[in-house]
Image 1 (cartoon, rainbow, N blue to C red):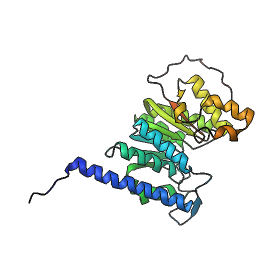
Image 2: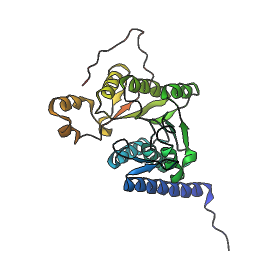
Image 3: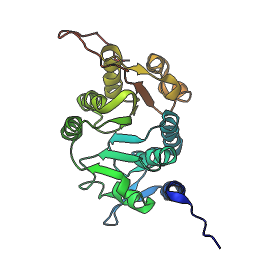
Image 4: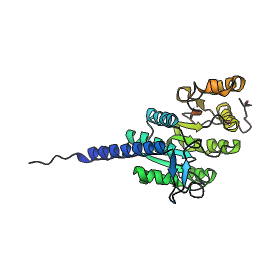
Length: 257
C-alpha cells in the first residue's frame, strides 16, 4: 500500500491552518476574558487600551486585502493588534509571514503580556520584538534595508511621537505600502497625519478607515454622530510608489482639524 505524501507545500499549508486556528482561539479567549495576563500573573484590562473586536477585524481585513506578508507596529502592549495582523498574513503567505513589534514598556509595564499571547497562539517564532523606543529601533531597521507591506502606529500618541513614527516608518515601507494609524480621536495624532498628507506625498485610503476630510465635521458637530460612520478611529495612508523628493525649504501649511 503506497503512503500518501502531502508534500512540503501541503504540510506547510496544514501547519499554517493550524496556527491560524490557534491565533483565532487565543483572540477569542482574550476577548471572552476581557483581560490579558503577563508572565508574572499580572492582569490587564483589554479596554480601553487594546483594540476592540471590530477594530481588530477591520485591521486584519485591511492586511488581507493588501496581501500583506511582513508587518510592523509601534506599540505592542497586550499583542492584540499584532495577533490580528499575524492571523491575516499567515492566511496570505504561510511560509513567509512575520511580524515586527516595538514597545519600550512591554517588560516594565505590560509584564510581557503581548509576548505571552503570541506564545499561547504558537507564533512566537514569527515575531521579531524590540523592547526599545521606536525612534531608536526604526533607524536600525532602515539601515538594514528592511521592507514591510503594512505598518501600524499605536505607540507614542504625543504629536512629536506620532510624527516621528510616521517619518521613520515610512522609510521601511515598500513602495505603495500602507501605514495604518490608530486613535485619530486625539488632536495630536490628527495633526501628525495632516502634516504627512499635506507634505509627504501620502494619500488617505478612505475605504480602509477614517476620512480626514470628515474631521472638521467631528469638531463642529460632535464626535459621536460622525464616528459611528467611520472605521474605528483609524486612518490608512498609502505611501507613494516613488520616493518624494522635496526642495530643501519645502513646507506646505496644514490645519489641525
